[in-house]
Image (tube, rainbow, N blue to C red):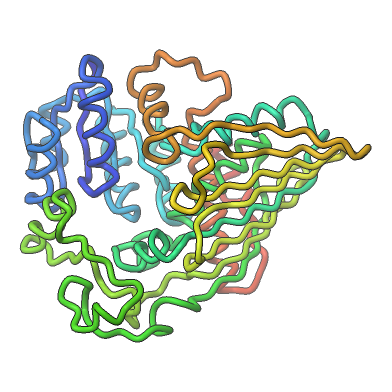
Length: 404
């Protein structure tokens, strides 16, 4: 039985431990929970069956002596808790992204090297059946040597808008969507092609949310213009939303449902990134957060063919399969139909938790992500943010050369 402490009790941390309670009750013991907001921590403790709520991080670790320190705080605070845990002698597991900028990234890598402890980052896209199938095909050289990747990600006005309601709306908290969200996508590509990013350039802007819209109120739940707003969302009827956020507002003043048209929002909703890899592969990537539908398009072109895969979220596409096409130079087309799984994030979370927390699933595809994996994916986003500001190509490889 592995003893786990949860640091940070937002929706993501809650979803993991609530699932662990059901999926692996004989393998993981939910020992201690800590959050800067004690009301939120108490709610998660009660709902998930933790043994104790702690009001101090160090005391939590000192008393529990955990096997797993699972850090799910606000992204910008990951480094603080990760470094302190490693200095106390504990391995750490970090919800993605590893952190938000290059300075905090290097602090984690330096602490890992100095203490000899281990950092694991939870990238669930590696566990989705569609990406596992693409990985297997690319490893079999169905397109020959990989030369170019084109990856387009569309967030709709339900999912995408939500990042502009929450703490993610400020780049100092989340690194923006190029870090918080795209770290998933960048890691998936790094893993699929088995190469390391070396240079990054990007463009980004805020074109739809923020001051571009008509703000009628501070938050959805009290907005006088709710009946006129296409992006209005009422979360007050959700018992978990109420327990995690609305009932905990008195402690820290955090509102989960702020207006997406606030003028102080400073993250991008319109992004384009170019990445050069160490073997010369070029990737073009785009992310928009206001699409009329949600999904992604991936194209990998190589010396002997082209792989295409497309996905739309369940609410837009009732098809139970995601489809892959491989085009050969002679005109042959091979199709692969991958069944979608039910559950969080395309069924990937459950498999990821089993591999990470129980460890009885063979990792034949190298899906468990290391600190370097976490660093390279977040640094693509961080370097993209820098490139947007400076208009220059940013050398990513130079940042972490001493840790590879």
